[in-house]
Length: 187
Ligand SMILES: Cc1cc2nc3c(=O)[nH]c(=O)nc-3n(C[C@H](O)[C@H](O)[C@H](O)COP(=O)(O)O)c2cc1C
Image (cartoon, rainbow, N blue to C red):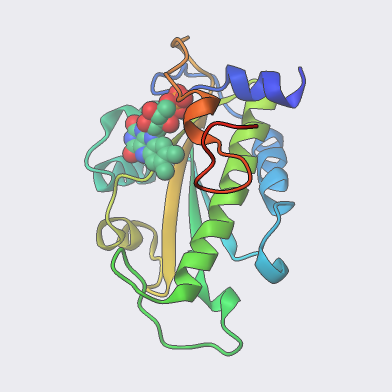
């Protein structure tokens, strides 16, 4: 399967079988994230692999009680470390309202690594779902994550028990312009 076919095949999956996800599969998924590009090669992403029933249940609760998350045998908590962007360690507290430009940069880079991870999972026959419906103040304490780190997403990983149809996407003509914002439909 080439990369576009793999992207076309990916769905957000919210129903999983009981089948275990091997440690080697998780490592391959994380390897894809490790190789992502980042501004000035800062590599601000950090990952916490969560398998225990207790911790997955606490994560689901912190994500506005999205109970279906418990079905996925692995949760990968994806964290942006703003200190990776600072020349010296600073006292920072980052949350949804933080204006610091460094926070935006590390979140942007971490999102790239997360999608690498998602696509590698897909290539291995695994399924995933991005979860970002949570507040930092709810999710950080579950895993003891300090206040200067920003949880960008939790990715559920497992074998799908569902085959949802593709969800709609805008046509290229709606999202692409050529040469300038004012492009009047030329190519
Ligand atoms: C940043 C982000 C946050 C998301 N948060 C959630 C979430 O908290 N819960 C959920 O069920 N799905 C979540 N999703 C999945 C989206 O609902 C899904 O990607 C979208 O509906 C398109 O469906 P598809 O991924 O199957 O193409 C999230 C996706 C992204 C990219």
